[in-house]
Amino acid sequence: MRVPRAAGTAFALGVLAITAAVAAVEAPNGSPLTWEQWHSEPGVVDVAGPLSGGAIVVAAGRHLLRLTPGAVQSELSAAYATTPFAPPTGSEPYIALAQGESTGASCAFPRDTVFAIRPTTPSSVISIGPSGVVRTFVTLSGVGSLNGITFDTTGRFGYRLLVSGSLAGEHEAVVAVDCRGVATTLTRTAPRFEGGLTVAPASFAKFGGDLIAPDEISGRVLAIDAGGNATLIADSGVPSGGDTGVEGVAFVPPGFLAGGAAYTADRGTAGSPHPGTDTLLRLSASAFGAAGVHTGDMLLTTEASDRIVDIECGSSCTARTLGMGAAAAHGEGHLLLVAGNPHAKAPAVPSSSAAGPSGLIIAAVGALAAGAAAVITRVMVLRRRLEAGSTR
Image 1 (cartoon, rainbow, N blue to C red):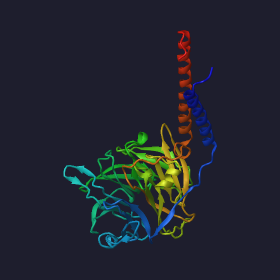
Image 2 (cartoon, rainbow, N blue to C red; image 1 turned 120 degrees about the vertical axis):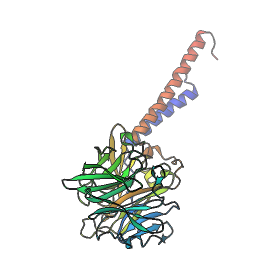
Image 3 (tube, one colour; image 1 turned 180 degrees about the horizontal axis):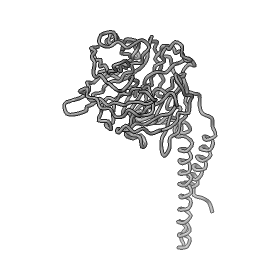
Image 4 (cartoon, rainbow, N blue to C red; image 1 turned 90 degrees about the vertical axis):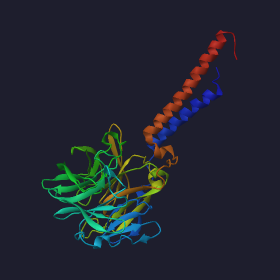
């Protein structure tokens, strides 16, 4: 019996899809990603943003800069030089940018205000307004030397500012601060971590809304919930240790893969095995898309050479290295992902890079099943017609 053309076509497409999927599984990965040395800035240590106008904020030495693709603007350049804040030489004054997060009635963090940790004794958090005015926002005691800062953007922590500090005994403190400067210590016994913290989006597996904390010493990535409880998410699978392991973390936001860029600091660090180049690094969103990164993925950078790690989580979490910067690069602070259009859909990319082998196989099996179903259905119809004396 001849198979009807439509059913045969569907069946053939299914077979071809299976063949392509198997080939994709066996095909080697594409070229590794490489950071662009985008903007030279002495003492660059962190980046945040974007501001309302689209610029990003860069912390470098005793200064804050507004940086756009076209030029460096100097409105905030003197902010770190005025009292009461002058970061100690060699310190890591990480920053976070307020997007107007509200922590209660008639109380919100002013939009475009930068908050920076002052990692000395006593520890404090400094605010720098859009005009460059500096003030002490909150002084913290009993939380050690501050080493991380980010905003809660999902609400699990009440949309507060989250700050971490290292304590004796390899422990970490986590403090939540509301928009009035009222601080609440969530834990003093979390495992050690340090660097460019972030809060996971609500959609991120079972860790949605948790504080995500990389640990350069062990290479682990931790989740800290609102009760201060720590859970291991995954091992990054890259070299770890002081000035080596994972440092910055961010989640791929909606619209990023349709256009945008990633930024991170390559800090000059004399005496380090990775001395750095004092450069703000950049990498286009399209490069991440071509490497098979998906919206919602967790991306990390390392201190050693600014390696890029992609972690996907379902029933379990898997990590893969996508690329790196120069061998001498010294990653520091946050990883910033800026979507050119937050509401845009990611462009279609070849399934061999975007969907991954498992997705390809599932799609191929679906196509094959659809073709087989069409054949079976047509055969049954013809059989019934023959039994009824009709061959139409």
